[in-house]
Amino acid sequence: MAADGLDEIDYGILHLLQQNARSTTPVDMAEQLPVTDTTIRNRIDRLEEEGVIEGYVPIVNYEKAGFPIRLQFSCTAPTKKRHQVAGQALELPHVVKVDEMLSARENVQVLAVAKTTEEVNEITAGLDDLPLTIERESLLREERRRPFGHFGQHVVDD
Image (cartoon, rainbow, N blue to C red; front, side):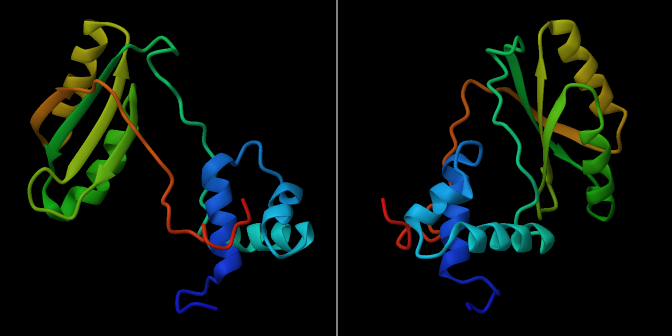
């Protein structure tokens, strides 16, 4: 096992789950990894128990779901309250993601979605009520993602 407790099979499982967790079964993974589907199920259970896999969530296209306005707020919270304020921001209506940054300024990044300018005003007012300062507010045009490519790709038989 590697120093962090994960081996190549674990990384291969993470690689395959990142590519398509919804449609890839342990049986499918066993066809691409040098272990049985039972071993893969046991490994996934262990990765979940250890907190390596924290959950499975869909990637939503908010525009197609009827929320055409996506706003990225770059905010500054007092460093001693950053964690608490980030949690409070995530509880606000329309907020879908909050990143807590290790910096003195712009240390809370908030992504919110809205249908109308009235909802945008509600989001901004909600953030203003928290102990943080909105440094920048940007309209998000497009978000691109990809899986982290260094999880066991070399172990997987394509």
